[in-house]
Image 1 (cartoon, helix red, strand yellow):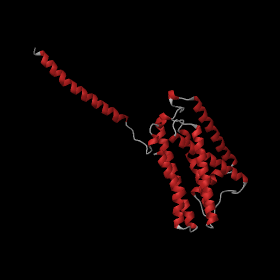
Image 2: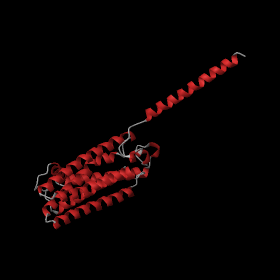
Image 3: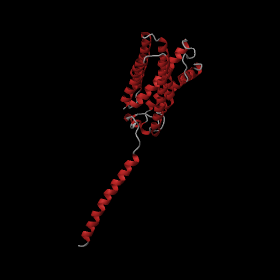
Length: 266
């Protein structure tokens, strides 16, 4: 009879100890699996939501892989065309953007070949930006969504150029408008082409490297946008544009689209 109370006491004392041990083990497991989050909520588990990443194991999608490989090959062919047939066009664009002097112009600007290379480089840049936006905003990835974003970016780009040209004619500032358009053109080319290697790499690296690539893309984009704003302010200040008009232009056509994009990603 003395054995029964002793066994019950031992059993009662073991149960709480086991519960506490299991609770501690679960807390340690949660702490070990935690990792820092990116500033955008839509980037959470982005890799798992994108179907067909080449190194994604069981979720491998042959059709998606072939599509992204074809796009990569076509993109690299056009980049090679710019490098071989552009006669230093890309070098001139980068030199102009990062080391611009007032009154300078792009090489052979106004010629038909130059217009072709400008149009081609702008299309390549906007295609990379549309691919990036689709990767961030519309999982699973679909090239149709990328096409929609490409058309939206292209339309907004020409809308801004048209408004700048209209303001230049309205306020008798055609030379200032030409400088701003040239700065917008070169900054659009530099932005897309600079982040293109990292955007394409998003589809070929392991899942653990995606966050790092996104941070690199974000850093490069911020640097280029800072240079763009500095150039715009120098142009507007150099032509003695009114402070009111300067603020309206920067807020309406430069800062507002960035805030809208941040809201969509947030």
